[in-house]
Amino acid sequence: MGGSKKGTEEWWQQYLTQGHQLEGIARVLFPRLPGGERCKVCSVPFGGFGRIFRLFGWAPSSKNPRLCGFCSDRLPAGGANVQVAVLVADVRGYTSMSERLSGQEVAAKMNRFFESCTSTLMEHDALIDKYLGDAVQALFLPGIAGADYVRSAVRAALALSKEFQEAGLPVGVGVHCGEAFVGNVGIAGIIDLTAMGDVVNTVHRLQGMAEAGEVIVTDAVYESFGADSLGEFESGWSRLDLELKGKTDKVIGWVTPDRSQG
Image (cartoon, rainbow, N blue to C red; front, side, top):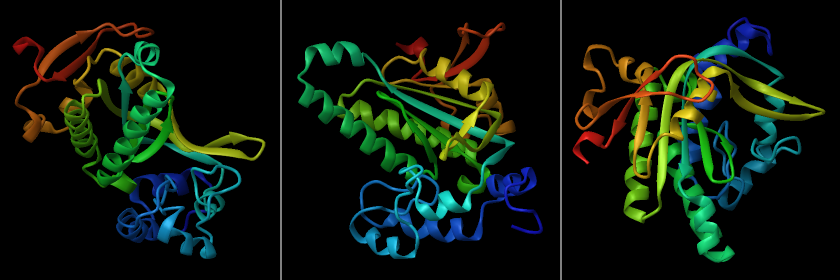
């Protein structure tokens, strides 16, 4: 990665914002291969045809089974403050659903939720950060999703919302963008590539305000498209002044479908 020493902040800056030659090749090939669970950095499948790649170091890491050994070994501890878009999708009414349905039925619905999220997010070049019980957190980074990473996050959010509305699963989605610390963090040999900072805290509060079938984005996302505003997404959005827990000032959000039309 240029002349940067591996693991330095400069190395991480380049990796997260410009990508890596191997990542570019991998993200073209690996998402198109069947095989179930995947490395959340390079997307190599761990099952099916992907088992062949285990011979070359792409087996699940013993440190973090959500990463392949190649990516886990290659990515050192550390990280950098970079621009990122963060998406959180959450199932609404999970507690009441658990009371109303059998364990098997709940598991089937959640499996469908996670499978659909994984597939759709991968299609939009997301890095799936965490599965959180009844929610998914994904990162959109310039080095993986390209310069239009914020737009990719919005496209993914709208695609998820539409998909789950058609499936009859109540899901709310939030998207926020800004600077966050992104890197490989952990203790005692257990590492995780993740994002930390106010951007992450805000998007979790934000998605909590989204009703089933809604996508809420912050003003930072809305304004990131410049004069084009939300471009092809502009129709049907309405402004919200939100009071989010832990935030001193109100947060401006934009929601679709337009609540004023409801």
